[in-house]
Length: 358
Image 1 (cartoon, helix red, strand yellow):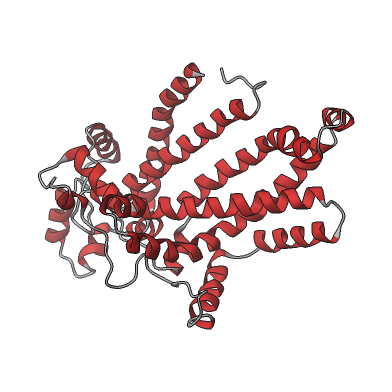
Image 2: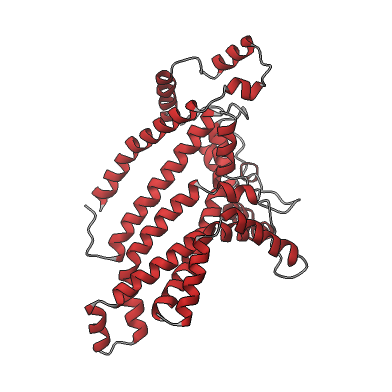
């Protein structure tokens, strides 16, 4: 197992460099001059020459990519052309929002999807099975942006003066703000990686609320997270429900399940101990793939609900030809995607001891 994890971590580097190289070439192939985008169409040749010299855009692509890799090795992802801030600061401010949204969506999709799949499999060919699969089919074909708008309309407008009201946009209610943990802990002189960690924790709602004991902030943030999590988690929920049903039905038809029931084991124990554990392997695969897809593709949801996450920042950076931000955010998303898939592979050995990861 240790060898497997070590090998996968070593393979992480060439994969990341390959992803960065493809992104590096593609983003520079987008039509449009970053100087004209940032300074306007009336920018003079002298201004553009100064602009490109400042951000190293006059060098050829090979030199620019090599310089990026060297700086990345030092923990420096460059400075945003649009914001004039270090890219690591933008990542520390934006990534926690996207991670919270991804976790919320996966909790919703996994709990509801697995539950519906189990109910559907155990009630096969009944009206319950039909209803759950209809729900799953509707969910998998529901456009995220449309569902987000419908949820916001229902819970924020129609149910406005009821206990079921939920905020339709933003991360926190106006007037509430995350506490700067560097100031709260008296760590104002931090720099480098330590500053990145503290900034990241500052923008992580759960950590910030627990560290400062601000339960009002925690409750408000979680209420703002419900609608976008449901909107972005509906399609994975439907996929997981259908996968759970088919996988569980296949396992229930195996000889060892019939043997367990013939030995007189309680039905609930046969399902929970023997059937579900073996049926979970393909479901875990789907959960891992969907987690990576959610993390990198929450653009529409963040836009509909006005959330300051990675998706909106990445789209804005592409439109503004902000190359350092695109490269930095792509690096982070690729790393998280690979690590999630590594955790999925490791979980195989835990769910089925017959599987050996070597």
